[in-house]
Length: 87
Image 1: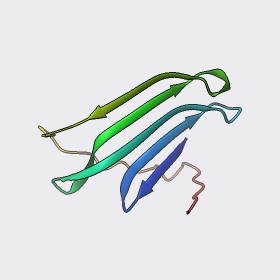
Image 2 (image 1 turned 180 degrees about the vertical axis):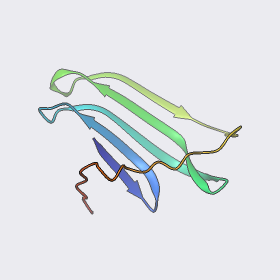
Image 3 (image 1 turned 30 degrees about the vertical axis):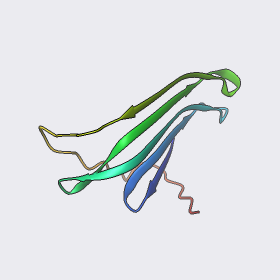
Image 4 (image 1 turned 30 degrees about the horizontal axis):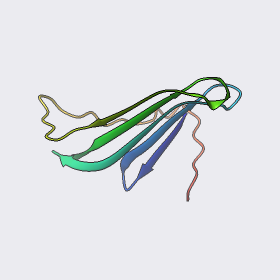
């Protein structure tokens, strides 16, 4: 799994199968502040099959998000091996 962030905001998530082929990709854009967290107003999701064939694609756009509860702060567990890439 590859998680991309910029300025503390989640911007992408990729999942790959064991032979390093792309299985899913999600992109998060146009973040807005809700409470003390940033929430993506646009989410794109792609599902891939064998040989990187695009099987399904979705795009979700939020216009007026409201929360009934709190946004949880996701943290990668300390036991997970992390390889960091910088651009």
